[in-house]
Image 1 (tube, helix red, strand yellow):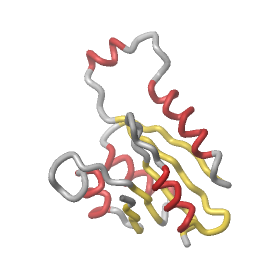
Image 2 (cartoon, rainbow, N blue to C red):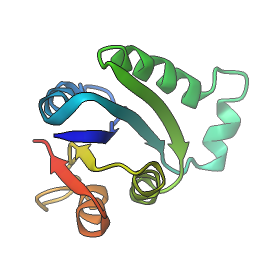
Image 3 (cartoon, rainbow, N blue to C red):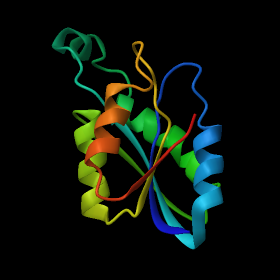
Image 4 (cartoon, rainbow, N blue to C red):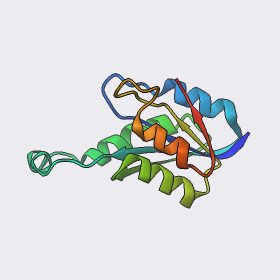
Length: 131
């Protein structure tokens, strides 16, 4: 059972984090801390100019993830910007996560996407991949 779980979640149309949530609950120790994370990848400058005056994307995502976090006893939400694998690995290390629960997203013919591959190779803690 794990005491400090990091759960990176995709925020894309059609993706529901049900499998990740079930997995995290199944392996969590009583009273475990769960951190729900979404990483916003680099956004082209012309897109950020188009979004001026609209609610910040990070705030919208954090609000939605707050609702997911309510289903855990002890949870927090983080929305970071940058390279997804680097942010996941950095937060796992700085927060002392003992497990990362991650649903890989295939973007090519590989078994799982590049972010999941990097996290599996470089994480200093257990990585639980959910299909």
